Length: 294
Image (cartoon, rainbow, N blue to C red; front, top):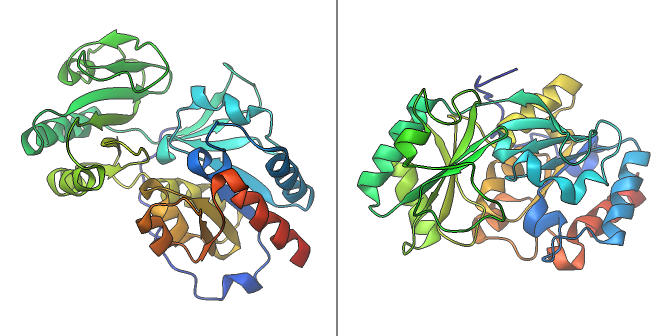
């Protein structure tokens, strides 16, 4: 199912002190948050996630990663086994294991919007190069750097990759990646949001000047809000964790939210609380404390 409907509650702040409301769902980012810098999940974190599920609290992995990069946590899914990937562009069932993930929900970036974003950003930031992330395929321009540990399915200008008869025409576009070799990452994000406007949603999760561009209104927060609404879970009953600008909306929306000790300043400002760094098992620290209060 493909969905791009607006979710008006995705930036709402809780009206009731969330610490007094028992949590029903934990939403955690992966890189820089749940995962240590070596991309491992510590035994302490594995135990904390299992204990939360045992206590009846659902755990959602909410990441900018594509589905094919979810092998790092496929062994740690419990219960529903769902993850939100691509910054909200897809909900994926991880139960099939590596290479057999199934898309439950897709919120695609229309090719017309993607082409507009490419053109507007080429004009605003000359030298920007692009890659295109689809449900199963990955395509990039010839000058796009080797930022990802994979071989692209096709090399061509973004305009050709995004054409209606382009190489991945049979698949929906989840997001486009825009990289600039010299602009400051935060400045690039600000410039791009001003240039693209409401044609797409722009964010970033990389320490480099690499932007992630999704459909209008598509974010971790809005897709998490959809998943929670389907389960009858209110935002006050959600505890969220993150470290980078692509987590800001989710942390603002959730009843309780924690910025990692290694988080970007915008994330610290958005979250209602703070925990220790990812390498110190900051997510597990909060979950353990939370479970002791239940």
